Length: 266
Image (tube, rainbow, N blue to C red; front, side):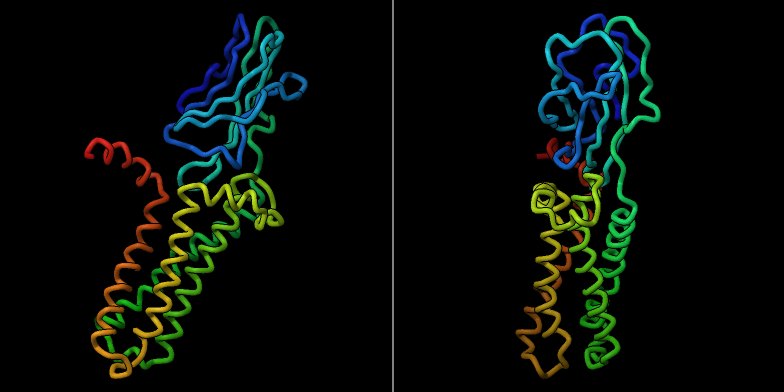
């Protein structure tokens, strides 16, 4: 967070018409929230929060009475991590209620967080192991006939694909702060698929599927497949492999931060 309106601890003579939180980069709020409650914990903000790039705002009703108010938020950063927090302000006279200790932004289910983190790390590890396919194809053709080599390569593919599926299903509950039971919630899945993170994971799964088909032929011993066909499959596998790697880099802060530079260059 780089700014809030009103600022934390502000004492206002007149009530604001909306509350706005500005972040250092574009965020998603579909699975999260921005809401304002009064000193008794009753929600006073109206409607759904509206994201506008790095800013998220929610309207307040006209004629808001004097008193202390707490604004709390839970948003999702470009690399899929939820961020929560809160701040408070006062309209008119009266004491300022501190946001410390309040339910500032929801909590992440520890089971969901653990599995989600394991799935992400597993996806990285799996793609590294599956990358052994390139070594076998380019540097060690005799390795195609080794059952152990094949098991290692396919194990890497399985871990990478499973990690991507779990990350896709668990991103919704992870961002919304709900449990494993919501992993198959159509609304949360739809929300995830509408984000850059979800689209990248979907593309990764499609590309991994294509590479799996190609890998079946590439792991056959020389002579079983025509050289022209094998050369074509190698080229297609290389292109898809680069695409898979691009999906890992396409969901991080660095990728998002590079967008303004790319816009200037274009």
